Length: 261
Image (cartoon, rainbow, N blue to C red; front, side, top):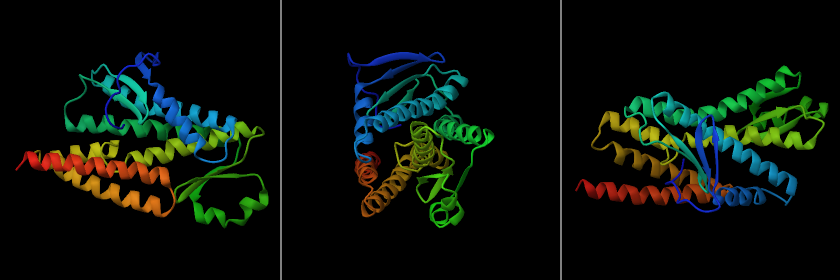
């Protein structure tokens, strides 16, 4: 969940899922396509798989938010756009505890999708597992068997027995990557990610007067550290993203601090 809802355009795609109105802004496709093209050598099939996986995964994430909003009596709508997605709701839950549940439901839906895929592969008799990336890379039986693919997930990785179709293997790898890695990143206490908004709710419970400032201080500091780490390790997209979030948080922090002077 990043930034505000974009203005409507004539190129918007509109549809409903489980009764929730969904709008897809054209910049969603453009940014997803750019990310797919920027992740390696140009391959039309793999790029289209990437865009499709991002679309489904972001939609599932926002459906998680929207479902809990509806559970508490709200009437949410979903927007997918250049910075991800939004589950907007004018009549959503007002208490901090319920708002935190709404925020957790987005990453939770992505984790559930990855877990369902993991379980389906295992129940179908395919080898699949999870472990530390470095340990797996040094596990001799994995490579002697010549029957597993490894999908890195930061310091961890998922390994699985490949299907006969390379396209299906690519779908599996990307679904696991997006729904696990993006879910973890989204839970970092960096505003306006879900984790940053959860941190704000928790700080506000402790001290409503200074909660937002405390959350922004934490958010800005962590964003700077992640941006520096990502750039030093040549993860340029992640570095630019968190660099922008750090800048945005410092601006918001200055605004809120000036309000209380």
